[in-house]
Image (cartoon, rainbow over all chains, first blue to last red; front, side):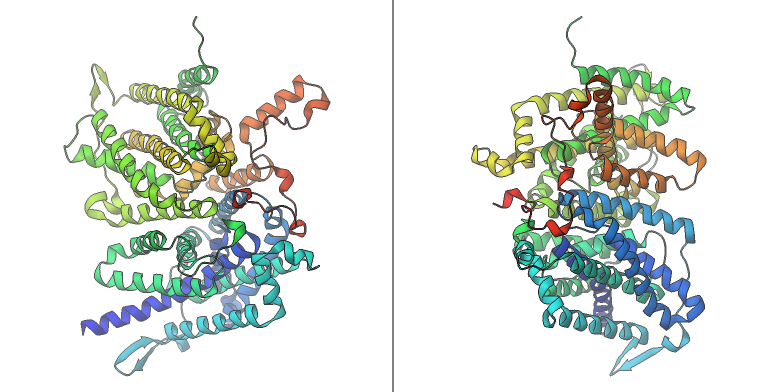
Amino acid sequence: MHALFLLEQVVNGLVLGGYYLLIALGLSLIFSVGGVVNLAHGAFYAFGAYASLELAKYLGFGPAVALSPVAVAGLGILFERFLLRRLYDADPILGLLLTFALAMVAEQVIRLIWGAAPLPASLPPSFKGQVMLGHFMFSRYRLLLLAVVALVLALLWLLLHKTSFGRVVRAGVQRPDMVAALGIRLQPYMTAIVALGVGLAALGGALFAPITVVHPAMGAEIITVAFVVVVIGGLGSFWGVVLAALLVGLVRGVTIYFAPAAGEASMYVLMFIVLLLRPRGLLGERIERFE
Amino acid sequence: MSRVDPPLLTGAVALIALPLFMHVVGLTVNTACMAVIFAIAALGLNLLVGFTGLTSFGHAAWFGIGAYAAAIAQRSGFAAGIGPPILVAILFVAVVATALGVIILRRRGVYFSLLTLALSALTYAVAFRWTAVTGGEDGLGGLHRGALGPLDLDNALAYYGVVALIGLAVLYGLLRVIRSPFGHVLVAIRENPLRASFQGYPIERYKLAVFVLSAVVTGLAGALSAFQNYLVSADATSVAYSGELLAMVVIGGMRHLLGPALGALFFVLFRELFSIWSSNWLLWFGLAFVAFVMYSPGGLIEIGGKLRRRTGRSRASLRRNPGKASCWRPSRLSSLSAASAPSPAPTSR
């Protein structure tokens, strides 16, 4: 029976990992292409959750989850166009400071619009219920989440590795000067990457709103976790981030099983251990610009 | 009168005038005391950010660890009064900072910032959850200040006097540090780590030393805040508070010794005066922070300097003084289409 319960925690951990993954992937993309650490990324995640709640009032749950990332991606384009763009060639610390300040402002804006109290986010009845798989019982919605995350992951991988868009982006990560010398302007690619990354974060917010708490500080809470995932996985590595997100989710899930209070602390300990053994993260590549 | 250092003199005058000033604007001595405590913490942080070029996003960790160490030392009866618990806090922070500094300083630049951010989140998680030691959500209360000779420290003004004297001592100490050969090596590391190492300086050891010193100064401020509030809560170690400390440093001016102290005063006044008018003062503070980062990364001190130059010199010399290089080189804030420009990290060559 204990083993069964532990296995349930493992699955919950994987769901948790999928949730971190949606946020960490966008963060890692923006970081590796633009060289900007987007500390405001959590704010877009929170906007995604709030926007989906707002849209769900008129359109219902499904369309709201699909539309809110699109709306937030639009916001992301404005953010890139008017703020982030000034930072690409600047000292990276300036980007950290600016996006940190923006995250602060965004959280207050959310408080202003939706109030400080957590909002209830309910799941439509059609998504409720449990599924029996052999001897195990899983919540249907959590399994659906895993499937959606896997689908997003596959699409993103195809986009980055099998299209000309992805080739330019990956080249831009390693040698932006070379890409520019070949006559390709990286600017529109960067706008697209920011919109994509921010949209992924918003999708995470919208999808996970029903099983987490929607409150103004949710962005600030997720952002440190997302960074832990990126740092563990290694910058610029797609699979590194995937591996790290699942690992962090798993470690957290299992730790919560044995010592509930230490759940949050466990991932930071994991990060420090990984960094001691592999300073560049699990699968991190050497990127000259960021050393 | 013997010669007194200008920053030290400014600091001393400001510390004497501060309670009077607070009284005039309708605030209490306790607010003045918090301003001085924040100023000490920000001065400690600036040792890393401004002088060594290591941007720590998690200095609230040291503030909180110092506060909790002092509180636990006093509550357990291990150390009485306020002096011994503060010493315990300083020693404890020094030991922890040495151990963690070895790990965190393995990474540079942005990674260093992210690791310090994670450190702050970790200490918050521990402080919030490890109820047996830290009191969890309730925090640790029931602290007492005791007396210092005939002086009853429960009197707000008396405690302010103690905090102000400690603040002045910290200022003097930091002044000595940054003017010493050690301090000059720190600036060399900030400007060009590779060249500093070619000069034969063991820069990793220097970084660790300044990391520990910075943590200790901020931890001292944390211990003082514990007795100021008679209470330590997990908020003292949160990421949000780390950001506020950093905002104080940036808004005040990181390239001047007294800049962060000015930033701390700005923060406290902003919080106290704005919260009268508006319940979301943090929104306006955040916007002010954004404005400073984008338009005046040199902070209030640099704005003051510019104004003085504008009135004092001819228009021709208004252009940025080349001797005082601006810290972020705003000229490099160009678009990505100029990506062929030199890569932002001269250290990688």
